[in-house]
Each structure stands twice: as structure tokens, then as C-alpha cells.
Image (cartoon, rainbow, N blue to C red; front, side, top):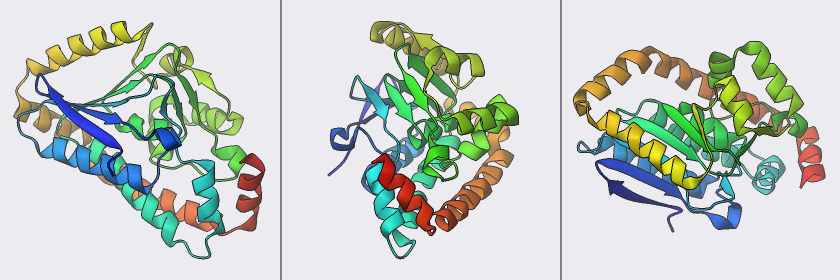
Length: 253
């Protein structure tokens, strides 16, 4: 079963998350479907952009679900955790290194990894009602899916530490002020109009030139990101072996 569906409109690929059972929670199933869709888009020579969005009004993604994290913490081995992180980390890399212009449309709440993955996009646009959360600290775990790479580079070390340690919900206006998103829209109609205008500007360029530009801008950073994702995985695996993590997750479920 696929948890995403795709559609090409005006030479742009729309990838829509549709996993209502887990509110687009990031697990191996969703990750695999998403990875396949992104890779297909990256290999499609006729398109200039990839747009990631949610089918559901209330949420973009709940991130890794507490119940799934608890299963990983209860597992005697680290196989399950490594498998999930392997798939999701490759999603991050495919987005970041995409030869297409990548855009995230955030319509509702985006928690933890569900937002961090979108930091790999070239542009992030949110509705005003959207809410964001980095909730690693209370769970006793370290950041994932590139958060430790993207956040300091976008908002600086001090702001990143504040965001992670406070673990509070923050609004689209606050995300805009920090530079985590580039635009805030009042409603879906305005969002679609903004996206349409942005993609029109992108379409006026030459697709191979877009790919070359992104390679020049991100080529060196891509290797740094890959190394950081690997380090994030090792830190998480080590933490998940500690009984304290299971206790904290059980208290939060």
C-alpha cells in the first residue's frame, strides 16, 4: 500500500502525503513510499519542480510517532531503528540533492522529523494556522533527519539550542521570523496562488541550468549533510539502548 500519491501539473510534480492512520507519521512504510516518489521525480527530465504537501487539512506530519519510537526503544536490537532511519535519511538526501526546485507546502502542524525533513527543501510556505514543534528534549533523545545540520545553519547555534531545549509549539509567524519558512499565507487559496506564481518563475528557466545551479550551490554541502545524518543515527542508536528513553516515551504515550 502506498501512503503518497503523485500528480504532474504544468511540468511540476506534486507529492501528497496521505497516511491518516498515523497523521502522516514518519515510519518505514511512509518513508519508503515517499522515497520512491522523490526519486521518480528527480529522474523525470520533463519537470522543473517537486512540491511536497499533505492531503489533510489539520496536519502536515506528526513526525515519528511516540508509539513507533517506543517499539524501537523496547527492541533488544537496533535493527528496526536503523532501518527506519536509513529510509528517512535517504528521503532527506534525495530532497536536498534534487536537481529540481523543491517546495514544501505546510498546511497544518509539522512536528519533529516531519518538519526537519522539509528543511531540506529549497522553499517552505506555510498557512498561518500551521504549528511547529521540536520535541526531542523531553523524550531524552537527540535531533534527527538533518535537524542538527539544517537548524544551526538557518537560525544559528544559540537559537537552535533554545528551540530544542524549550520544546514548545511555535507559530508560522515565529517560523517566518526565524527564517525556517519563507512565506505565510492566510488560506489555501492564497497558498495556491503564491505557489503558482513561484512555479511560473521557476518554469521560465532551463531545467538543466536549474540542476547545474543546485549542484554548484549544494554539492559540497551534500557530503557534509550525509556525514551528519550518519552521526545523528549513531547518537540515536546509542541513546535508544538506554532504559531511560523507554521510561520517558512510556510516560508521554
